Length: 150
Image (cartoon, rainbow, N blue to C red):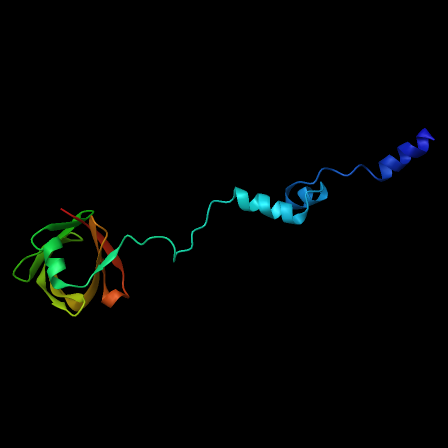
């Protein structure tokens, strides 16, 4: 009989221990138990709607003036200043930036020259997180730049 048992074992080797989800189900944990285990191992997920957004819109010219007028705004090597009299100036991408700014509705609008090139007029959305200023170009549809307020 031993020979017959040996032959059967060679034809049908013992099942290996399956890993992962299928192995856990095969070991009798059950699919729902495995899902609970997987959920416990994952990092907590907070929907974007529930996570606090630190950025607060700046829609009032007086608030903008209080935050940044006459102060240096820096982003890496670039910096600019919105002066009290409506001028703006600074250094951007290795070139001198000069222009004018005004408030229009809930947006900051500017005209400017960068080096020898005239930039297109642009109205931008402004937000503040308590320490930094975020400028979103093209009325909120363009690229963003975050500036440290010095």
